[in-house]
Image (tube, rainbow, N blue to C red):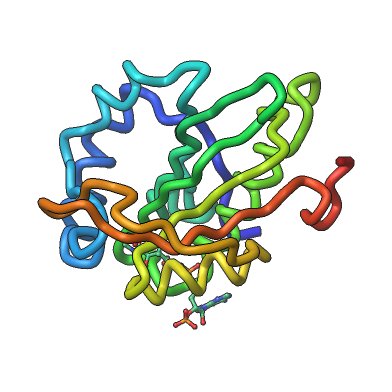
Length: 174
Ligand SMILES: CC(C)(COP(=O)(O)OP(=O)(O)OC[C@H]1O[C@@H](n2cnc3c(N)ncnc32)[C@H](O)[C@@H]1OP(=O)(O)O)[C@@H](O)C(=O)NCCC(=O)NCCS
C-alpha cells in the first residue's frame, strides 16, 4: 500500500490549498475548484458528510480527497462518493488505492470504526472518462442515466449513475 486515508484536520488547510491550486486545471473541468474550502468542509463534517484525505505514505503529500456525502442511514444506509486527485500523484494509481480504502471504511460496521453503509453511488458526467474508469475499476455497476442531476459549471448536468452494494465488495462481511 502506497497510501493511507485519514480525516482532514485544521493543520491541513495550507497543504490542501496548495494541492487544489496545483490541480485546478484537471479538477476544474468537472468539479468546483475551492483551494480555501477546507475550513468550511471541516465545519460541515457530521452524520451526513464524512471526508477522507488520501495521503502518500512515503512523502506525506496529499494524493486526493473523497467526500462520502448525502449519508442516509435507517433502512437505506446509502451515500454518494465525490472525489478529486491532486498533482503530482494523479494518474499513478494511488487515487484508486485510496478509494479502495475509503470503500472498505464505508462498508465496515460502525463497531469497527466503519460507516456501516450498505450502498454507495458514484455519479459521473457522461464525458468524464477518467472518473468512469475509476468507478468501473472499483467494481461499481452502471445503473442508469440521470438527466439534469447536479448543478455544476453554471448548469444542471446529466450524470451516469454507478452503484455498489456491500455484498458485491470483495472481502466485505456483508
Ligand atoms: C477522476 C480522478 C479522481 C481519477 O484519478 P486518477 O489520479 O486518474 O486515479 P489513478 O491514478 O488511481 O488512476 C489510475 C490510472 O493510473 C495509472 N497507473 C499508473 N501507475 C499505476 C499503478 N502503479 N497502479 C495502478 N494504476 C496505475 C493507470 O493506468 C490509470 O491510468 P488510465 O486510467 O489512464 O489507464 C481524477 O482524474 C480527477 O481528479 N478528476 C477531476 C475531478 C473529477 O472528475 N472527479 C470525479 C467527479 S465524478
